[in-house]
Length: 139
Image (cartoon, rainbow, N blue to C red; front, side, top):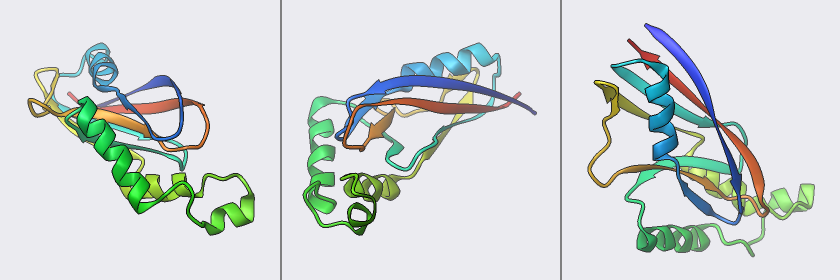
């Protein structure tokens, strides 16, 4: 088994910015030269998250509305009381999805569903420069 690590650099808008990173993950996989295995994408940080969705405008808006309902920006958060940075909601939202997503690949191609894409969500309350870690394990 071989392990190859790559990075994806993003400049985000913050405020639940949802970015389709499927093409960047596929490009990293292609450059790895590996044929069969699993790829994991990880964000180091506690206000971003990764998952898969059908990336289309309606669902993007639905996700934003959903997170606003369950962890509203204007809610009361002990994190904000302690740190005074106003992003308590971002920490709660990101913890619900988690910092990583994994997908199998075969014959050098991601094995995603027809309408399935990998997305990064930046929940923070400000624009950020993010570096995602892509770790590809396989043969």
